[in-house]
Amino acid sequence: MGKTIGIIGGGQLGMMLAEEIRALGGRTVCLDPSPDAPAFAVADERVVGAFDDEQALERLCAAADTVTYEFENVPGSLLRRLESRYDIPQGIRPLLDSQDRLREKNNARDHGLRTPRYAAADDEASLREAIRRIGFPAVLKTRTLGYDGHGQAVLRGEADVPGALPLLAVPCILEEFVPFDYEASVVLVGDERGIVRFPVGRNIHRDGILDLSIVPPDADRQVIGEMVARSEAFMRGCGYRGILAIEYFVRDGAFYFNEMAPRPHNSGHYTIEGCTTNQFRELARYLLGQPLEEPRLLGPTVMKNVLGRDLEAARQLAAEGLPGVHVHLYGKREARPLRKMGHVTFTDTTAEAYAERWASRFVR
Ligand code: AMP
Picture (cartoon, rainbow, N blue to C red):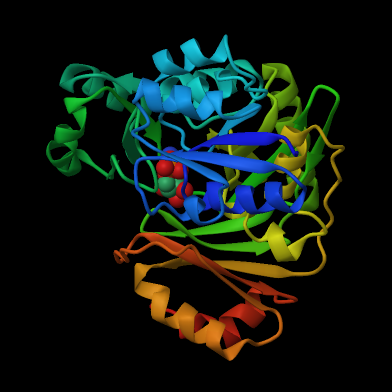
């Protein structure tokens, strides 16, 4: 019987990972609080329980040979107890390092990556001090539990400060606002024995949520090359294993670390059809102890995220079944306007071709 991989988290990332593990001969057991989590449709076994339910986490780990995570906010104290007793090859450190934006940025800077200027803001007085040092415009973010632009406020000037003060109910970080030329992300899989690197895309966000990934990015190749090399050195320097995604802001040929995630990344979904191998498969190989494969881009590719508001358009595209249009729907029951419900990958499609042929199909 194949190895059983335990996945903490049953969202779309867990679902796509479970599909690849199965294709490579492995089994999966997933933990998620929601009984109809997407990954449960694919997993061999399911554990329904909260991410801070120690017994549920124990059950997941006990049912698995090797454990990974796709959900980032499992309480650190619980993870530490699990790490000593179960095989979690990625370890819990990258997870802990990414759970707190202040720790995450300190760690990035300490390991050689340039970040936007930042300062802790724990209360109004320290926010004032941070504004004095960083100036306007700036972005105030909660240190923990933020995602997709939640828990953030852009401060363009003094007038925006009072409205942002409620964020200070929890510890925050103030960052310099980077008027970036574009955003890009790097996805790496491996460890000290070798790392494979996925081709970098240009990411376009809307409402703080990834909207499009465009690959190749139509950017200075030297900058992208350096970004990948620095990311790899960072991963090695930190001793991280498994998968690591890093998001950057690029401005005037310089790149600034924004955040990282030790799990498959939304900007890497294009790899499923756009590359010779994908981020989920390489992570699956890593977890199953199989040799990794260096990915190669097959051709220009555009990935469009499908939020609730785009669901009808995506269903229509799926029904049309056109070549080069790959519709992924995650099977989530409740469609909220800004909830990620799926994605569509357009292969053999440049940014211009996407704008001309496909953009008008989605809500603008
Ligand atoms: P985050 O959750 O930190 O990735 O932020 C979500 C999005 O908000 C990013 O992808 C950017 O588009 C924007 N953003 C966040 N921080 C900054 C910043 N310091 N400067 C400019 N834009 C930002």
